[in-house]
Length: 130
Image (cartoon, rainbow, N blue to C red):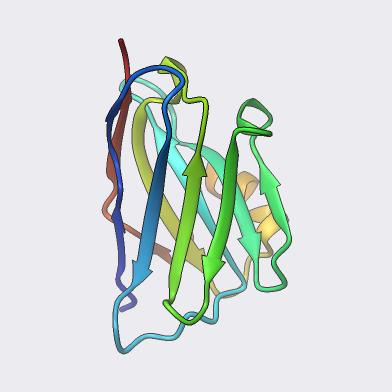
């Protein structure tokens, strides 16, 4: 069972920045078809934020385009989400996900339709408030 371990969440004021990390635990390969970040706010459905495929192609939720950047470091087996100009509506529990078969451009609708990626992390909390 692959382990994904997120970190980097915290509390920031509106306009602030955070960078989330998702490390693939040692002993496991970083060779996934797609990886992504999802978030869930209290009382709301989980939504896709950003995805990346193994060719580096990315896709973003419209609401975060221009503010968030997803990228990965293969040598460190780590997925990142750089978040700038944070807004209160960005608050939530952020999860990373990985799948061996689902293409990156399909990962968000795949999850939002109720299906599960191969692997989830445990989540890291992001709170944006003044």
